[in-house]
Image (cartoon, rainbow, N blue to C red):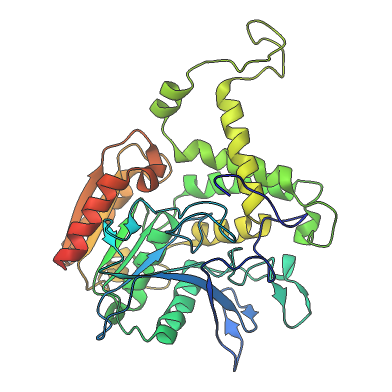
Length: 389
C-alpha cells in the first residue's frame, strides 16, 4: 500500500470493526462497571487497541511503553500493509537491531482512549445506545488515558515498566505515568512536551477546533450516518497545526517564496494563485482526513489543552516531587509549539527535587516534528538512557 491513503468509510478515517486488523490486539476492560473519566462521564466496556514488538522476558523486566502523539496510533513500528496504511511512525527508532531494539526490549504501544484507530473513541459504537458515540463522547484527559493504560499493563502482567517514553502528547502521558504510578515506572523519557499547556498552545487548539465546528458537515459531531463528514474543517485544522510542527527556517529553506505551477498570473498576483507552501499544507490536510476522525481530533486536542501536571496536586513542585525514577528530558531548540524552555523546566524542577534527571537538546531545523524525524539523535539518546537505567 506504500504511502497511499485510502479511506474506507464515507465520513471518517477511523478504523472500524470489520476493517483489516493488521498487527493490532484488543483489550476490553471495565466489564463489571463503567470506566469513569475525570469530566464525570463514563465509557461502557471500553477497548484499547495496542501492538507489541519483541518478547517479554521471564521476569518481565524488559517492558517498554511507548505513547503516541496527537494523531498517532499503536503502529509505532512495522511495515505498511492491510490495516496500516503507512510504515510505523517511529520505525526508524523501534525495530529489530534498532535504537530501541525489539530483540532486547518488549515494546508496547497503545492507541489512546479517545483515539480512532481501534481504541474506544467518538467513532466507536456506544454499547448503551447501539449508535456511534459522536457528540455524546465524554471529555477525556491525559490522566484518563494513563489509567486505562495501567489496566492494560495489568492485563499484560507487567507490574513495572523499564521505561515509559513519549513525544508531544505522548510525553504528557509519560509524565503522568511517573506522577500517578511512580512504583510502576523505572524510568521515564518525556520528549518535546510540557508539564502544563500554555495559553498559546491552547489558543492554537482553539483555532483548529473552530475550523472543524464550522464545517457544514460537522452536524454537532453526529455525522457518521451522513453522506459526508467534516473533511474540510479537519483538513484546515491540520494545516493550522502543521504550521506549528515545523520551524520558520525549514519552511524558508524548503519553499521560500516559490510559486506553484499553474497560477493564472505570471507573478502570482491573482487572488487564488498559490505559493508552494500552500500546496504542502493542503497535502497534509488531505492525508490526515484519509486516516483520522474529526471528533477524535477534537477529543485528543482537548485532552492536551487540559494537561496540567499540577492540577489538584498543590502546584508544580508538589506534583514533580512524586516522580521518583530517573528521567531523560529531550527538548528541541527550534520547537515553536512546545518550546525547549518547557523541557528545561522539567529538568530544573526534577533536579531541584533531587530526582536523577538528564537533559538532551536535539539539533534540528525540523521544529517540533524533530522528535519524529531526527531518529538518530533521539534514538541514540533513548538507547543510552534506558541501557543505563
